[in-house]
Length: 160
Figure 1: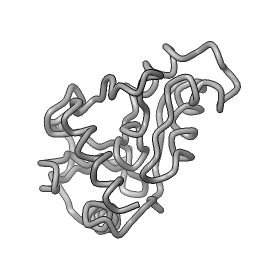
Figure 2: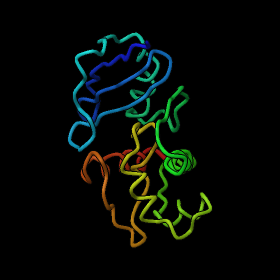
Figure 3: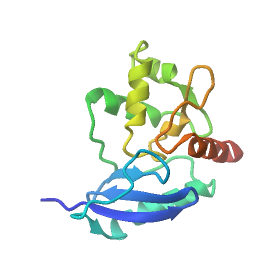
């Protein structure tokens, strides 16, 4: 049985719960959202699997990294994973609407389903669900709260 590792990383935006299977990043829990923010008792607390993700996150928060080069493991439906892969195509400092993401994956009428998949993104920031906005330009929802979403978009706008 594979172990699950965790580490609480104190980031520029608050404490993030990082989760890994030892080889892949499996999750990031955000500080002020509905995402999981506590580890399970069976998980192993170890910084080792997170040295590369932390280094890349720190560079991102300094405005020095525009994309991430990390092994991730995504667990979701085929529709959800297609949405999450599409999110990685949104350029740093740019935003797409839910409708644009739906069109990108070839499901132009699936804006609401894209919104649901976006909200279930297990690895926010790395998979930039914060770059998705409403068709009217509103920030709409975000697992870490609209305030955090705005902070991330502002950080990227300053460093684009």
